Image 1 (cartoon, rainbow, N blue to C red):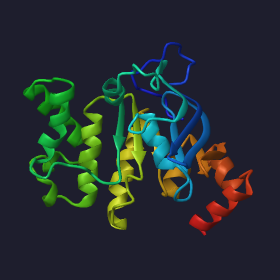
Image 2 (cartoon, rainbow, N blue to C red; image 1 turned 135 degrees about the vertical axis):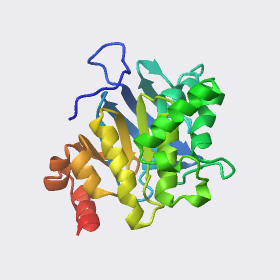
Image 3 (cartoon, one colour; image 1 turned 180 degrees about the horizontal axis):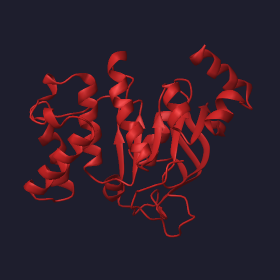
Length: 257
């Protein structure tokens, strides 16, 4: 695992940055998460795999409280973020999320898309927000595209603007929900390269993806989910080469065969 350069600190150095305890989520009568328990440590890259409908995206959305868990607890930097009085806005400042769709404002150019949340949520001055935005756009390889509007950018470039926007909030953890699935194949590499750079820099990341090469090369741990439960949890070598579950073996064979 790459040494972490992240400045986030949990109450004790050996404590996980995220601890999930018996997490359940139902939509009406439909149970989507069925007792997820997992520790994620600072600087770790955890890749979540599984078939459609296995609960992967719901799991991520519970982590930053876009969905309210039905029961269970999520501790983030020592704070129970499922508690009734938990400050959801503060949680989301520290836990950035990148979605399948880029969700950029079409009437704003790249730099102003990255500036907006800084000004509204962090109350940064316009000049400070712009300085940070330009730095993060350079970080994702778009320094020369800062004045381009979304419809002037490729899908991969738009997704990199979305990543820059999340990074501009200085999150302690980054969540990626199928960040490349809406992209044409030739555009995927640029986004994955940015994610690899973040991992190398020590960013704590939870990544839902179907990009098996990314999981093999970048993950510290690979989680395989099905039916709202964790079926397998191990290193990439363990999960890809020596899966314990027959279901994991079948899934890996299907997506890599």
